[in-house]
Amino acid sequence: MLALSTLAKKTAGETTMISNQEIELYRRSGYLFVPEVFSPAEITELRAATDEFVERSREVSEHNEVYDLEDDHTATRPRVRRIKTPHLHHPAYAAAAGHEKVVDILGRLIGPGLRFDTGKLNLKEADGGAAVEWHQDWAFYPHTNDDLAAVGIMLDDVDAENGPLMVIPGSHRGPVYDHHSGGAFCGAIDVEKHAIALDQAVPVLGPAGSISIHHCRTLHGSVPNSSLRPRRLLLFQYLAADAFPLLGVPDIAEFDSRLLNGQATLEPRLADVPVRMPLPPAPHQGSIFENQRSAANSFLAKTG
View 1 (cartoon, rainbow, N blue to C red):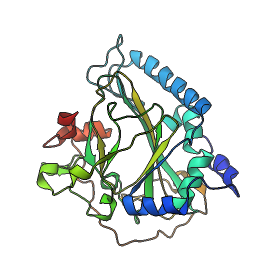
View 2: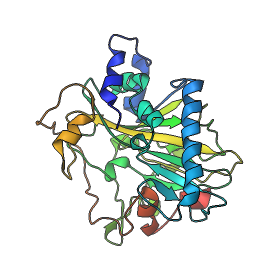
View 3: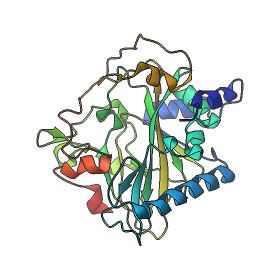
C-alpha cells in the first residue's frame, strides 16, 4: 500500500476546508457534506481506474479478494457491486485515501492522531445496483472509542434517482441497534422491530468530487439505482489513533503503518459507548451485501 502518511503530512500549516460551524453540524447530525474536495482531474483518474477494474471483471465469475459481483454479472455484461480494498490494488485509490484535503478535514473532526482503516468502492450501475439495508458501521467493528468516520468520495453526480447514500441525522447519539438475525450477525437492522425515525432520513446529494462524512454510529443505507446513470461511491474508513478494535489487533506493526499523523500508542482510549459484538459471525461471510443475505426482512431493496 502507498505510504499514506507521507502524503498526509503535506497539510501541515494549510488552511482548513471546513468551518467551526460545520464541525458543530457534524457533531450534532453525525454526517457532513463537503463539495469540491477532489478536482475534476482527480475524479477523471479515479473513474478511469474504476473502468479498468470493471473491464477486467469480465474474466471473473464469482466473488474473490477483489470483486463482489451482482447476481446478474456475466462476461458480456459485467456488473460489479463492490471493488474490495481498492487502495491496495491501484495507486489512484491509494492517493485518494491519503488525500491532503480529506486528512485536513478529518483532523478537524477527529483530531491530530488519525489512522486509516480500510476502504471499498461501491458501484450502482445504471438501472440496478444492490440496496444496502439500514445499518450502523459501528456494529461491524466496535472499538475502544467511537471516534471513527467513513468518507464517501462521489465519483459521479449523485441525485435522488441514482441510489444515494441516506442518513438519519442525530442517530449516532442513540442506541447501537441489533444487527442479528436467527442468532447470528447479519449486518442489517430489522426496522420493523425498532422505533427508527425513517421519515427523517436525508439523501446525501451532490456533484462528483464532493465527499460525505458519516460517524460510525450514524444509521445509513441506500436504495437501488433507478436511473440510467451510474452511482459510484469510493468509501474509506478512518479512526482516531487511540481507537483499538475490540476484536483485536492481529499485527501491531501493520496497524501502526496506517497512521496518517500523530503518534503510535499502546494505550487505547476507553470511552463509555454502547457496543454490540458482531458475533456469532454472519453465515454468509464477505462484503456487507453477503452479510445482509441472512437478514430476516429487507426494507430498502423493496423501496428502490
